[in-house]
Image 1: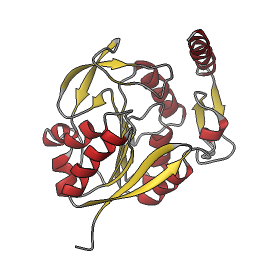
Image 2: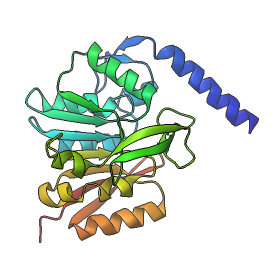
Image 3: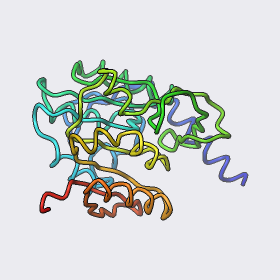
Length: 239
């Protein structure tokens, strides 16, 4: 237990130091960009979650609207901003204040204007909820025992209020709240049929997401990366 706590504290210390600096990316999917250093070289160079990343890139075309649900510091948002171009739009959802600060820094450093940031967690209904920031900046999740209170939004609600346009692609990485995100987006999914790139945590969560998605005529293709289970989800066009 002491070792785990020591390692977690060490990681936080290293990241608190490195996030103060901006790194120029000479290679990889972020080539030419200036990035706050909050991840290892394997991630920054696109060698982490490779199948997921490949499916994400192939799903996006210029002019598309992309939602990045659980944007963290913005790796996928930055990639999507580049792929969609000035005629497209990326909407990044992130509730953790430290991540939001770094994401804003990355957007400003690269003069990116086609990414809109919504400072909130995404779930089934609008409101407030407890949030556990976790031992790592990428492991924060909704939890009744969380130390933070964050704003929560549903995608359907934002769309109904005309605060966001309908998406062509949705990337979801929310550490166990996948079903809640999908339940709060059923109108968007059934009306616009966006492609989903989603990491699903645990068998129970998978079964619930599977039932919900297949009921809306979606087909799931499994992507296995780095011991993480992810899915490329598209509407069944053969029926």
